[in-house]
Image 1 (spheres, helix red, strand yellow):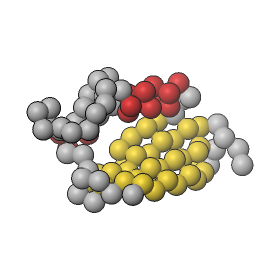
Image 2 (cartoon, rainbow, N blue to C red; image 1 turned 30 degrees about the vertical axis):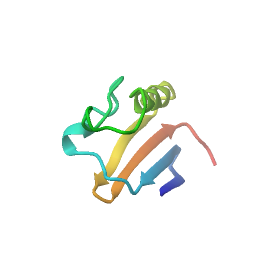
Image 3 (cartoon, rainbow, N blue to C red; image 1 turned 120 degrees about the vertical axis):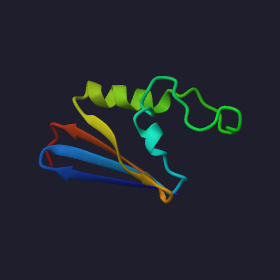
Length: 89
């Protein structure tokens, strides 16, 4: 399950995306936005991918003067928060 929430914090748009997956280990949180980084064990991984998804998200958000971060993670899932300035309601 994925939940998406969009809100305003002053003139900043805040997008939160939460899942109920296995979470991200503390050791990996600092690496997940790296180019070509793929979490988990290479020999046992079943999911396909290039490891570019979160790297590209970060590059796009930063190009818009925003910030992307892991808001929370644990065995009940992970929440990512994207904050972008310069919006008016």
